[in-house]
Length: 132
Image (tube, rainbow, N blue to C red; front, side, top):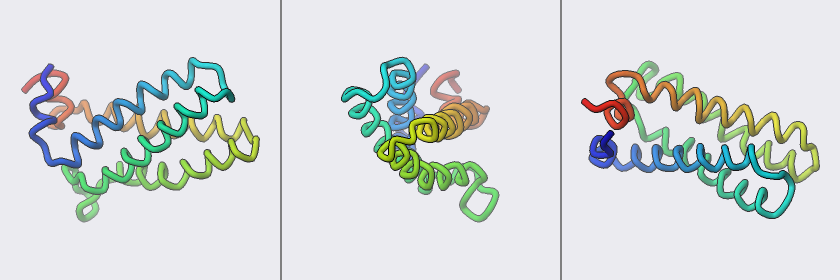
């Protein structure tokens, strides 16, 4: 395992990757920790900002071009940028079940599924985790 491929990539890529890794860890903490209290809200806001960075930074990453400079994975970024504020609003409106479901979908889709695709051969994160 070496961070060299990530650290030598275009600036949007390490920003995107490190924000995603931090969001993944904080997301796991959120799932395990008690809900509704100040720590959940504080970590939640940090997670929301990280996910916004992950989604927004993806628009400057064009390694897999299928539709112009974009790939189908960019649809997940749009989904995240639309659903993220809706999920926050649901929590604010005390619609906890909706909030929980939306956050789980964002975590599963934008971090877990998309993260697994980054491990495909030829991708930078594949080189980081498995070597050249």
